[in-house]
Length: 194
Ligand code: SF4
Image (cartoon, rainbow, N blue to C red; front, side, top):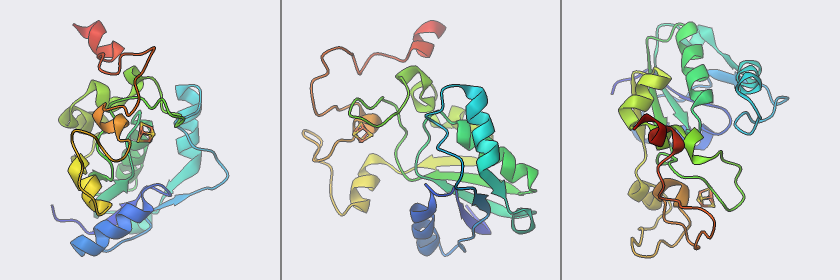
C-alpha cells in the first residue's frame, strides 16, 4: 500500500498512528480535528444520537486531505458507526483513497468485565468477515493487527492454552466461566439469516 499521510482517528488512534508512521515512513498528520466537548459515541443509547455525536465531534482538515491517499488508524471497530462516518468524512473532504488499519484484532465477542461494549449481535466483526466490513465501511482497504501481533507489540508471546492476559473480546477465550451466557453462540443476526 502506498499512501501520502497516516491520519489517526482522534484520540483513540493517535498512539498506533504514531507507531505506524514511524515504521512505514509515511508522514503522520492530524487530518481530523476532534472536539473534546462531546462524549464517546459507542455507549450512546440509539443510532440517531450516535450519528449526531460523530458529526459534532470530528471535523476533517480538507486542505490537507484533498487529493491525498490516507491511511486512517483507529484502535478498534466495535459497531462500526464511527468508522462509517469518518471514512465518509474523508471522502467528502476529497481523499483520493482511504485505507483503514486497526490496532486491535476484530472485536467479535462482548466484554463481561466492565467495558461497555454492546451485545454480540451489535458487534460488526461478529456478523461480517473483514472484506464485508470493508465494503460496509466503504474504505479502499481494511486490515487489523493479529492477536499474535498484539502480544508481540506488548513484548510478549501468547500462550494459546492459557492466555496471560484477557483477550476474550477478540478470541472468545474468557478467563472465567460464564455462568449465564454462551460466549460461542452465534450472534443473533447470523441466527436470523439462516
Ligand atoms: S480484553 Fe477482556 S476485559 Fe478487556 S475489553 Fe476485552 S473482554 Fe473486556
